[in-house]
Length: 115
Image 1 (cartoon, one colour):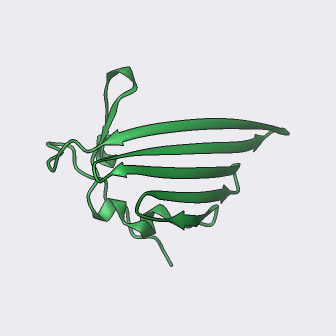
Image 2 (image 1 turned 90 degrees about the vertical axis):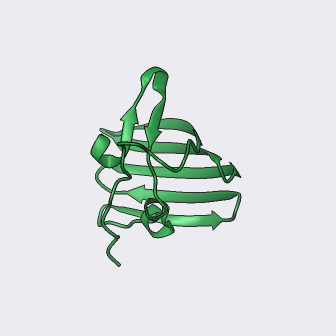
């Protein structure tokens, strides 16, 4: 996980290292043959999106709420269809800025999406 810029801690707390590049809007809207993401709205205080995927068959509605430049909350609702049944998972992640230096944890370097 460390190679992806993530350090797992105790009590459900994780540390994630982001750079300006890793937060680039284009990476949040990455498209693939299996999944498509549509940005429904984007402002300085919130983002809303919907992702639809084939294999697995799932839909994700997401919302990011920015309390300020140093903290945000992301809420997602994921509906997944499998073996004739549909399940829903809801997740809330609260994040805050810890500082400019992630120490030995480096931000993940994902390739730019294909356009």
